[in-house]
Image (cartoon, rainbow, N blue to C red; front, side, top):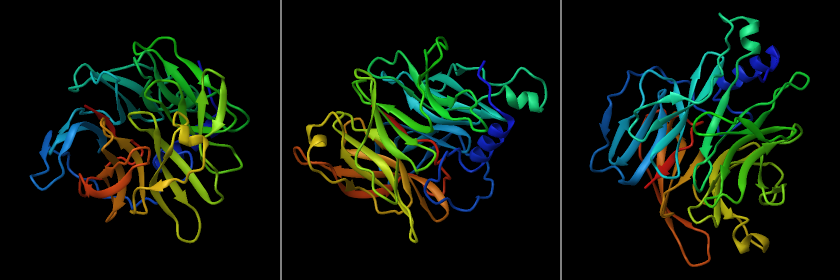
Length: 349
């Protein structure tokens, strides 16, 4: 059983209370007032953008499915977040949070047959130091493409001094063979495989710097920089395009006027990656993150702050042969919904 110190747990709980981030993300609004439980099905109306396919997101402790102009709540009675489609679109992996721990769950595409894959709650009774020492957190699950034979996520390593790092772990969809994939001396977040399963992109924060993008090449066993590091800019939330040629990500400009927006760059699977190029900015919100490509690559969903609410947005993209996409207008999919900003949307046909 993996264990970590009480001080480490208190540190993680403090992070979870501020959005479960391991480093500062986009500026957050003030805490909203509680809202009544929304109905099971909501229709956004004819003026709302039409979502082609099926778009998952988290809101109010539930997993929601948006298709067309209709949103359906798939989970109830669980503190559910961070959903992700399986490669075949038949199942969803997600996180269920509770007091001092969280677990991986899997359910069918329609929300039925939900069940846990991990058992991170301590067997010790009551909320005691012993309970804290033997409970764990799991976050940000993703199916491994192209066949979905593994689920990847981040969780704690064994304690080192007074810290407990987040590393990349893997587990079978039936809950067996759980083990750590990639130990690193720092914090890891947002692991995501290329569509062909050749490379794993993630955000990594050594203790002395802010988060930057890296990728892991299983064939060589190397961890390499993903794009150029620029002083004062933090990069996280990588997302591969459906063809694997491009990576969208969130970049935070530190300084007197901080801002976070979505950018795109060639991926290591794109020959342009090894030449001269510059990233292209896709959003202008100043507080945007968590990009998710549509299955055909013509649109992108993301989360942004407006009027003290995290909401889901839809960005149209224009393409030219051999060139990165250009933004062609963004529209809101939700308004005042307080979407979970730590939960990247997930899109399937």
